[in-house]
Length: 279
Image (cartoon, rainbow, N blue to C red; front, side, top):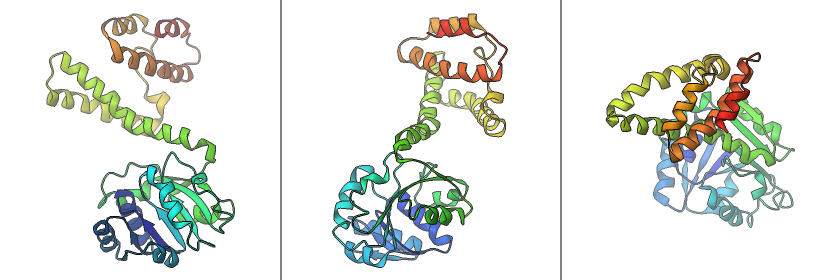
């Protein structure tokens, strides 16, 4: 497949390099910032385009690797060109292929293809894409072809429905961004107890690393410990008594989710009183 990219940010760089390294023909990049397109083209040994219509003409598959808010704008620019038989993809986690309005009437095929991975560095993140799940949703006529493409690289690909995209993206945000917030809250509470920022970070590191390793190896139920899991109501009451404002709200909300995991782990344990405490 001849693959072109509109947008030359971190995702464009990373996905283009990943495809090129897996023997796909990356024809090149177009960007409103010509310097970025030239840099991405050099990185992937492809071509930098200054004519958007020419990139569309040269490509069989187009990836719109632009911010979510610009996808519809770019689509309006390319839909007036000849896209018959072409596959148009965006990489948004939250948006579906429906953003490509009228694409079937124009003879094209629309997809949302999203790596379940936080792309943080345009020059190095591509190395980690081989271990990532990809989700795909879009035109049924070509969905098996696009699924097979990424499976041929060794990726696991999950086909999802367009109506589930926002919930899916929320799940990814919880596992990535919200975890950072929880750890940041923990660090702040330690600093209120007399730790400085560096010592709080060092103190939490073994707990975080050990917990994540246990979760990934054995699952959430097996990894769960602590006062809620063991039904230690007095300790939970003490925690709630000393926490205020947002910290207390977060503790309660997340604890309710933990309680559901605890119930799955300890099916014979009565957690009714713990439920009352948390509510």
